[in-house]
Length: 122
Image (cartoon, rainbow, N blue to C red; front, side, top):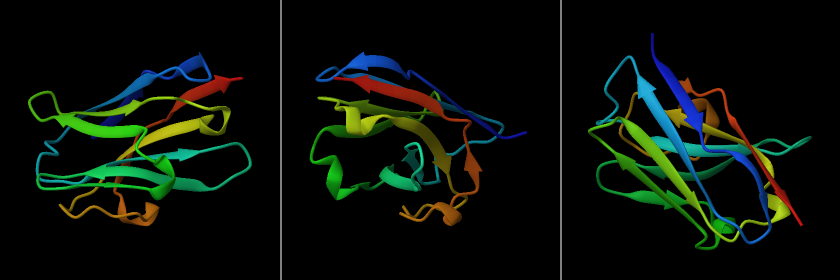
């Protein structure tokens, strides 16, 4: 069974940093695009960043604060988040496609993690 498991969320203060991890199992995703999404309370799920072998892509509102990366040997995806604000409070999800192209659209992703909560206090 394919599983994506996020970790690294928690409660932090405004201005702090977090690094989220997503470890995949059940298949090799080296030839697939992987991305991070988030969903705040009462809001829809929004694309944050995606990565494949040749490119990365970021939502404009990230404004240089977030960096996506991956460790192919460990089948693990990361999201480094700096200068966090209360507006970043959300559940953060890892997603993977059976396709190499990065997409901004949630329906294009085949596999999802359970999410990890990030709460930023002021």
